[in-house]
Amino acid sequence: MRALFQKLQQFYLKYERHITTVAFVVGFVVDNLTLTRVDLLFDNLVLFSYLLVATASILFFNMTSVTTTTGFFGSVRSLVPLTMQFAFGGLFSGFFIFYTQSASLAASWPFLLLLLLLLIGNEALKKRYSRFVFQMSMLFFVLFSYLIFFFPILLHEISARVFILSGVASLFAIVALIGLLLRVMPAREQEWKKALTVSIGGIFLFVNIFYFANIIPPIPLSLKEAGVYHSVTRTEDNAYMVSYEQNKWPLFFGKTSATFHKNPGESVYFYSAVFAPTDLDTNIFHSWQYYDESIGEWREMSRIGFPIIGGRDGGYRGYSMKTSVVPGDWRVQVETARGQILGRVKFIIVESQTSSPLKTEMR
Image 1 (cartoon, rainbow, N blue to C red):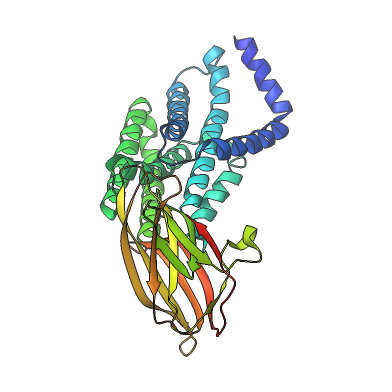
Image 2: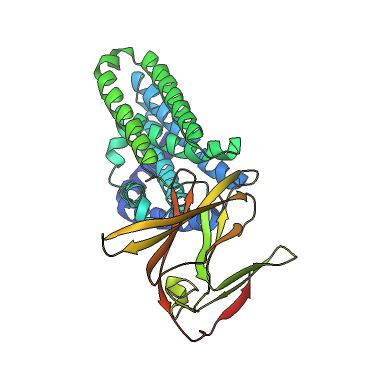
């Protein structure tokens, strides 16, 4: 068995660059194809498996550090940092997929950029996976990131108190794990205590600041569809009939045109479909904002809310309307009750005396 591990180690070292590049590309593609809904059992089992592999690897690596590193366990231990790298890479990939689905790029780009850098830079971090403080810091970050959306699914509630609960649970779990490992390595406690406090405390503070500044996406909610329409009517069979001006470039900028030709007395409708996990009910708001050129800022003209019910793949549908709008630059933000932005649609309202050609569809 030892000879087999030595051969595997030699093979990996010889083709390391090619193996890691192929593994990164294949892993990201597979995750994109398999991780589809944040509330599905399979998707959570995949992420939870990565968490277990990362935690087990850290436990094995550090517990064997106080014993002999020769023989079978020595050969296995030399490959454990690669296992950690694989598990953390899978978690960063999954988080990037799910958090991107829930994000408005304009509001959440700093957090998404961090996840992207961790995903791409995972290969460059391989040497750090043998360092205890780095291991614990990364494990705390991925555990916190996972519980941020797992607890709302589990408790059927998305709120600040559920976020706080996820943070407290993450801290409790990481402190318990650190305590267990330091009992095995008591001589290293003084060396690591300050660094662990600063690192994990900093991550906890950083994530909380990002959350309450509405930079972290409102996961597990996600915006499936949104646009400005000339009419929205709910039918008897619980469908929606919508009429809109078509976009010339629908593949890149959505179906509805960014220019709304408004006839005198006509109302403007905004339609959205927001996905929420099964049994999670919450409120969604349409924030209608007008760009006031006199002050150079966006002004909120109205904020219209309505409840959504989770479970529908295409998202829970709803709409709002405004009857008195002036020509100019407008945008509607789809927000949570706390003001977290799920998405934003910008459009220009132009006064028109003639009817524009419209397309009618069922939603």
